[in-house]
Image 1 (cartoon, rainbow, N blue to C red):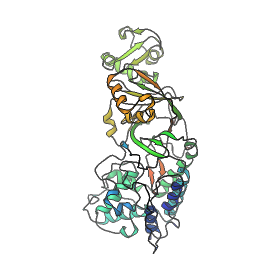
Image 2 (image 1 turned 45 degrees about the horizontal axis):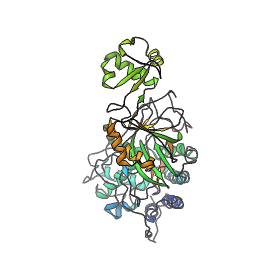
Image 3 (image 1 turned 45 degrees about the vertical axis):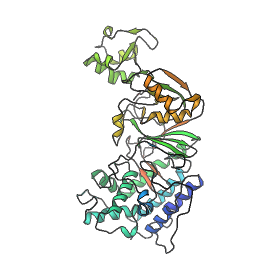
Image 4 (image 1 turned 90 degrees about the horizontal axis):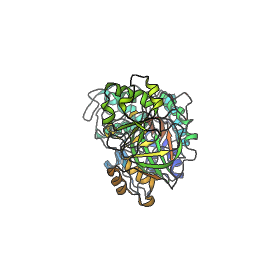
Length: 464
């Protein structure tokens, strides 16, 4: 049944595209899809390269499907871990970024592959069941096996087994990692729901993202910071390889993060937080009306205009409309533990007044869906990112950065080197292993023709 789904190997095509761009390729990946969908008698041995083939656990780029069956060192880790947490890669690791110059042709190849699947009826629905964990048995297990085999997570000869064994658990873990789900190796309700999304719906998602790629991949730069908002993930990219990937917190649906391209201009250590009017109106004034002590607790000072004198909060008529208060007074939070940006702010020019920054509420990085900010991007392990951005400029290394952060001294550092910033909206992208990564359309933008700018809401300053 599965033979002949694709006359051309998806992995082979995408691997070739990435190899020309200097990115990691495993010939074994091509063999996997050939074996799953296109019976051959010739075996293909992986080529010997200098690329480290250990699994990039937690990274956007998974090991190829074939490696899940060949070596336990290369399988996705099953540990209830989040699908995306901060990873720092050694210089000998070659990890492909989510977005690069080969992204469009790779996604085009994937679209053809999924068109073949859709024409042949796609796949059936999967329902959560107690048997869908390692050691379980039954017809529900067969349904999961067949579902994963169609998309390439299992070899064709493993599609009909009754037992939920270790191989199936690893395949489920790979599926979860590619869909931004907690990597458990068990089919819970969220995993079952993701597996049940029809092939044609996945195809529509890929087509919606394909139109964005020409704009997103234009002038990426040699060194760039990539933020994929639906994935809530940031990558520091240099020389077409990911140096580090970071979990981030992005804008909530009612206060979305915009899609922007710019260059980092400066780093502010222990910055003041100048509250935008929208935050004053929606958040600060309502809290002060309940308790004026909140200003002291949050270390917020109020000024009569941006450059005006400081005023006593007791002199303000808090019963006045919040809009009038926000128009007249400027709210500034002092450096320290309560500061909304914590120890560092990464500035880049843009019309939306957004930026990247540290946060005092680091527990939110433990959430799998991190859409909590008011538009800005909060970065996990931001000092690691800042150290890379500065590149030892004027002696600014990780140790010095952490020392300044602890001191709470206000220091601004203008960037001398060029580091581009790309905030993008990708709910589907293809990796060099031939597998497509999918994320939820958190702002409901797929199918609308949206590419760049502010999805909804005000373009007046955000903070988050």
